[in-house]
Length: 126
Image (cartoon, rainbow, N blue to C red; front, side, top):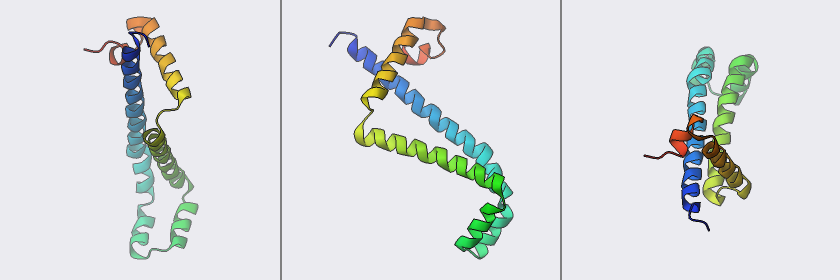
C-alpha cells in the first residue's frame, strides 16, 4: 500500500458521495417536474379513487391517461432503481468493478487538474 492510497480512497469516497447526491437530485427534480404534472393530470381520477377504490379503477385511470401514467412510471422507476442500487451498496459494498471505475475517474480528474469541474469537490479539500 503506497502512501497515496488513503488519499485516493478518500477522494473515491467523495466522488461516490457526489454521485449519490446527484442521482437523488435528479430523482427529486423528476418528481417535482414530471411527477407533479402527472399527478395533477390525474386529479379527477384520484378524487374518484379516494371515494371508490378498486384495482380496476386504477387500471382504467392509468390505461386511459397514458402520458401521466408514463410520467409516474418514470419517476417510480428511477426512484426504485436508486433505492435498489444504494441497498446493494449498503448490503454488499461497492463491487470491485465500480471501485476501479471510481478510482480511474479520480485519477482522470487529478490528471486534468483544476480545469476539471469536479476538481474542487473531489481533489482539493479545504
